[in-house]
Length: 310
Ligand SMILES: C[C@](O)(CO)[C@H](O)COP(=O)(O)OP(=O)(O)OC[C@H]1O[C@@H](n2ccc(N)nc2=O)[C@H](O)[C@@H]1O
Ligand SMILES: Nc1ncnc2c1ncn2[C@@H]1O[C@H](COP(=O)(O)OP(=O)(O)OP(=O)(O)O)[C@@H](O)[C@H]1O
Image (cartoon, rainbow, N blue to C red; front, side, top):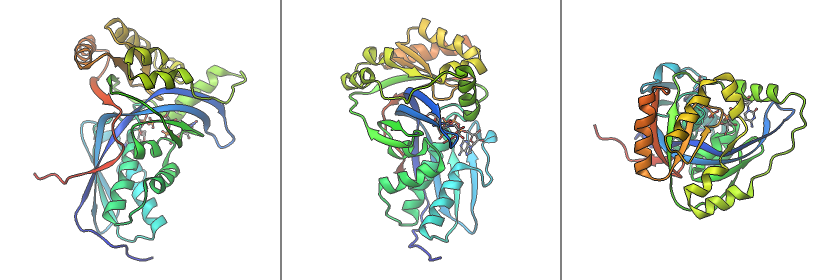
């Protein structure tokens, strides 16, 4: 092992959550993953991940949901830091601190986001100078969603979701997210999808050209009818009240509503910032969600931010 050039100052990286504008789930592959065709969009619900040189590998998490995030070796951000160290021959451990704001087990890729952020932060701290493409390759070893959280913006994902291609998308979209009290497990939702499909023959999924055209217009009215999620039925089957949340959001004027990824967060696309505020207030009043938050997409992937001066 060699010691990499080290910068003693801690590095903080801000990383977005994601919503899948389209999530087409293909057949179950031999490796236990489903082949996907998905369109990701990064939205500005963010976590901040700070890495600092330390005597040993460790992790702390702060924020309202910190108690349900592991701080042992299973934490995805800590795993990401250790993977990068192993692969790059670095022997200087770090402490990883996560200021968590992305819902946990909410279908918005919060753990994947922290892993992406840790890769970008450690690359800077250890002075490795890796390219985004190199970081995305390490990211794919940590989870299917992780490469997208390094990249951000709007992108098509294929394979198991880890193979990315750019999308020409205009404009900014306004979202409202209805966040549940308790999360859903991603493997359980995929399992429920398989159960509901039974022995049906499932074709390999391909991106929907109408969604691609809609993204080129930048018009949320045109995008809204194209939102699709093949995991939605499975998420509602496991959590029937999500159907009620979807109905409420549409009644209160959302242009489109969809379960985010594997759920249970429900994402509503709205016309503009005023509509986002109105829908946030209306959904909060129903009490059907633990928390309702508005966001904008697309935004950048994991990026270094200036150190906080407290
Ligand atoms: C639902 C999505 O968030 C949509 O973007 C992703 O497909 C999930 O991505 P992720 O959380 O990064 O998932 P991974 O950590 O790679 O895989 C967790 C588990 O989800 C299931 N999984 C995940 C991705 C995929 N294409 N097919 C699957 O069946 C598998 O059971 C896998 O063991
Ligand atoms: N840094 C982390 N942040 C959140 N959860 C983590 C982290 N590291 C490990 N986990 C574990 O991963 C599980 C899934 O959390 P996560 O928030 O990534 O779910 P998710 O957003 O539904 O994932 P996805 O949308 O990628 O399927 C959590 O229940 C937790 O036990």
